[in-house]
Image (tube, rainbow, N blue to C red; front, side, top):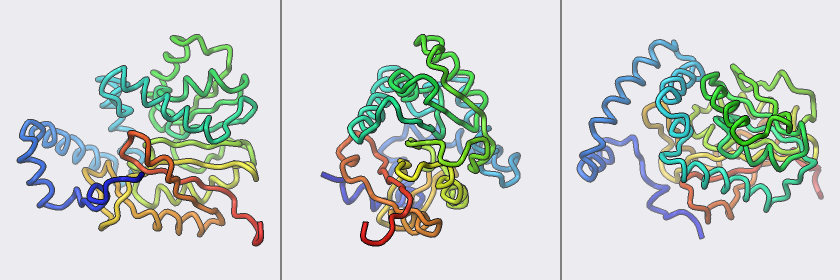
Amino acid sequence: MGRDPEFVKKNRASLSHRIAFARRHPDKVLPYLRRLGRDSWLRIASRGDHLAYYRSVMKSDAARNPEAAVGSGTHTSWLAMGKMQFDYLREHGLRPEHTMLEIGCGNLRAGRLFVDYLDTGNYTGIDISPDILRSARATVQEYGLADKLPRLEVVTDNRFAAFDDGAFDIVHAHSVYSHCPLPVIEECFAHIGRVLKPTGHFDFTFDRTEGPEHHVLNEDFYYRTQTLLDLAARYGLDGQFMDDWETRPHNQSKIRIRHRRPSGQ
């Protein structure tokens, strides 16, 4: 079971798609225009630095509603989305003794479950937004997780310089690189192998298209699967499209990255 072929062929940046969407959802036109105006200003203020731009987006969104800022319109959906991520990694071999890095941990939508499940000190969450990490620390307190010693850090790039070589069994990024242009993803791929154990893997979701690659509002980027697999290979990493993720009630797709295995293994 995969995505509807028509869903992954849509070019959401095309004028025809935007007109058709506006006709079907007239109530969303004004909020879209407001967001367009805000994001245009933030792009100018960030002077071409995408992470600085998105940090400003998160500051604005988190001020209104931290759960909505990470993509959950209700607390019920926040809980469900976190559980879906947690359950998937459990099904794919996550164990308490594993060390884990969550890129773009947000306010610990899934992280609270990872922290609780993993052995003490084995969870690290990073985010570019100090505003959303304040909410993450509140989540740690709310769920009584301080004794599990989660490490939460603000970062400004995708170089992972604060971490030792081979520090993590599992690296996880949900709905992070779906918001990034290709150079930001490439920076991640260039450095992720260093912090990943030889037997570890890195899961990330992305917005998949089988049509032209495009982006909407400089926030949602749509890539062909092969584009990302080829980019990973450039840095000595093997990528695998995770078909079974497609059965989950989530519109993004998932790729798993590992160290390249020698021929014959």
